[in-house]
Image 1 (cartoon, rainbow, N blue to C red):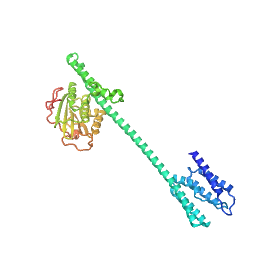
Image 2 (tube, rainbow, N blue to C red):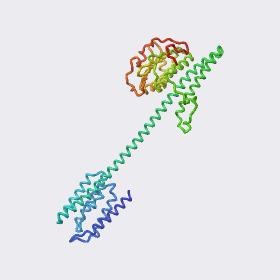
Image 3 (cartoon, rainbow, N blue to C red):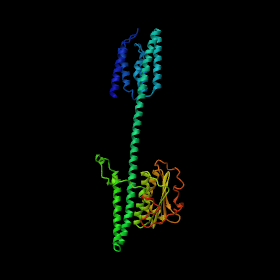
Image 4 (tube, rainbow, N blue to C red):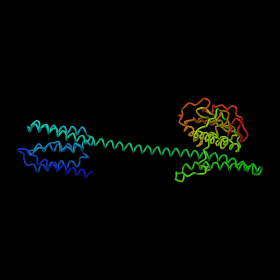
Length: 426
């Protein structure tokens, strides 16, 4: 920029010096020295046009008018001011540039009239100067508009890139939370069930070695299944590679389907092997659930049973799954310590269950029952885009568990058994 300003100042000074020196008027003195002086002043002022555009324009006009008041041949005040006028307009001072240019044009016209120039010749000169003045103003205004548009486009692009970066960060955070929730649910349930079975096996190892061996085999199977689920979750953390597209055996844990509501019977069976009396009910017409909803139902039930095993000191747990045309309700109840168990279990597990439900547009309530025990009730819409405040059916809504009545018709089953009301395939 500095080099451009210096070059422009030199070119303007040379042009002004030549034009001033060749100007000739009767009874005028030799203007050689004055022409070079005026050229030097106007050219020097252009070196400061970017930082002080208005002052440069005003001082240039004063210099030209002062020169024309002497006995030297006068020059038009318009064309020596073209660069300052363009600079002022480019800087956004359009009104000032227009006002100064119009004033210079009036002064030039007045001098021409005072000199007694013919009307047609005067009109020709005025039109030329007006055209040069308009050209300078339009050029400065157009380039300023283009510059402002470019800056706005750059700012908009930067804002869009920042928003994409924030959205990417939010997506990564949401995925990390989802994976952490999966890891928590799998590990917490596995540790609780396996720990209880190992304690039972330790007590039975001398009195009933066969029963102890069965418990150990069951704990080993649960551990193997949990490892498969953990591998699937950890697999999501790995970046895709070309080798990842190669076909893998169907037994690979990454290709196994995620658990869903159809595996609630197996989940209760594991709890029964840990010493709980389990009961499973399904109400309404069973309908296939979307994978995300089915997985959420399973995880909420899994975390609820894990809390029962670890904190409630309960003897039995009842799980009820209610199908409705627009969603599914889940009710998990135990006969344990109630409020004390709820306070103990109110950690990441309960928070994770509530996040799972609300993330799908559903709701979840957990709390002690009036007659003892603890209950977790959830309602999940069939479509994941249902708003969280959408009304749920009266028979499937999740009211406050403290006022929820006991499930009618629940028949306790022996350890690990599923009642006859369960549909085939459970």
